[in-house]
Amino acid sequence: MASTSPYANDHASPNGPHDARPTALKIIRDEGLDGKLTGKRTPYETYVAYGSSKTATTWMANEIERRYGPKGLRATSVHPGAVLTEKLSAQVDEAPGMMQNPAIALYMKSIAQGATTPVWAAVGKEWATKGGRYLAEMIEQGPLRGSESDFIKHGYAPHAYDKEGEERLWDLGLQLCSAAEK
Image 1 (cartoon, rainbow, N blue to C red):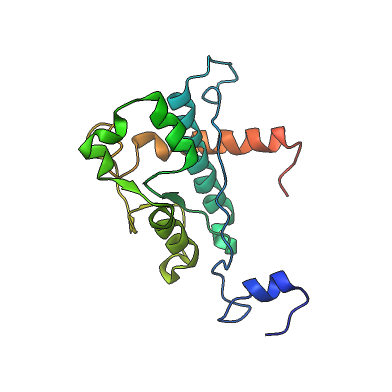
Image 2: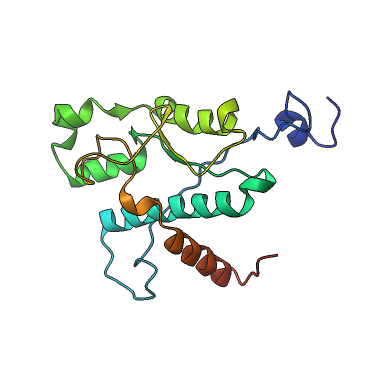
């Protein structure tokens, strides 16, 4: 397969130029969203910020899918699971005994295990033509059953799909980037 750069050669689609599936995947590090798109600053609370950042990334994926999905750009929300990373290790230090809880320890994943669903979402044939979904544990998830605070259960919270919130976040993103939609 001839190309103009080593990057293009490494990431060229094995199925030809008309294969819309991505051949590269970037995991974006999220640090939290202060407030809830109200324009008001709130005191920083680690887990509230974490949850807000997850909502924001889901909303952005939904809005990207809505606006650009018909043009072939797909966006999907993926939960890799509870992956034991350096960041999580620091949080575990804040909550002694957390890893000794058998219910929690049972659901911890290695980095490789945590990568399976994101990679599947990026290259799986079934996701080449659809997006705006919420994936975890290698399946499309439905609404969360039970308490939203129960991290062991899979599914999305009711506020994960909020067209008005998604549009407001999109507009805020354009404003913060001083960009106009074309």
